[in-house]
Length: 370
Ligand SMILES: Cc1cc2nc3c(=O)[nH]c(=O)nc-3n(C[C@H](O)[C@H](O)[C@H](O)COP(=O)(O)O)c2cc1C
Picture (cartoon, rainbow, N blue to C red):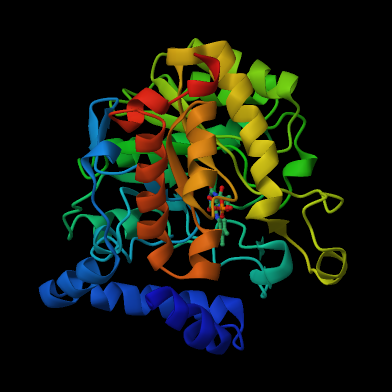
């Protein structure tokens, strides 16, 4: 019923307005609804699905279910109050950068409904690490809370300066006790001026420079690296091999947005008219799934994998889990299907796990390769 109302009434109205404005509207309203006990309780009644089969402990963090909000929706920590009631199992804030960035020229967001994809051209729009930490310190999260950190969107003379910027953010974040895990975003595809740099964070030399720099810190909570979707298996495994020697790297998130407009999952008319930016949703799914399998097969328990990209159903989430993901994340399906999608995915996932004879989700992780 709620899904019907969202898809038939609310969404057609929302989609008449620019996506940037709707996103801001949602954050404001979500923030407001999250402030009061009674609105949180109502949201819980409507949306949240609970089932013990979905509960698991990953890296000593307790998750009530495996569906997280991916980085890129709640940049400035507006939704800490409401997301648990909507049914999310965990919540990533960000990506945040050391210095604020107002965002790329608008439009920063666009819709490709036939392709079940969103166009993203934000370039790390956020209010900066100090603003976010101040905000987070005023609220207590009731589900695991993570923060995604990237480099400030500005020009750098050399990769060491870019690594220093990320280092500074982590240095500040490590002093806070509000986060259960960290994400290191090396794969934002729309930063200015990175093409001028000789090395980049996603090539082995630049990646090692970044990880060496962060090794000076005492990273005391699980850290996941958010990887590219469009690197080849060999390139991705080469980065994983480097990461595997840093014991504070607990896992990888597979994966970020895609750039390649010849991706077969795009509707041809939509992609022809799409503006500047990169894409989420269904066009990311197959790439992410393939990389999850390859990483899981090679690294098994060395990395916890968080699967991300194009999850619209319980079956989509289950596919990523059976390929080796312990947890999953999403954004795009929530925009197209409404917030009830979280409960629906959890419910269907629980059914699928049970149908396969598992007693708990953790038994299904990597099931294809056991
Ligand atoms: C509007 C938007 C903004 C995003 N911004 C970020 C970001 O700041 N950091 C990041 O790591 N990923 C970002 N992403 C990528 C998502 O976290 C995710 O990897 C991608 O959208 C695939 O998941 P989905 O298909 O469920 O949306 C963004 C995605 C969207 C749709």
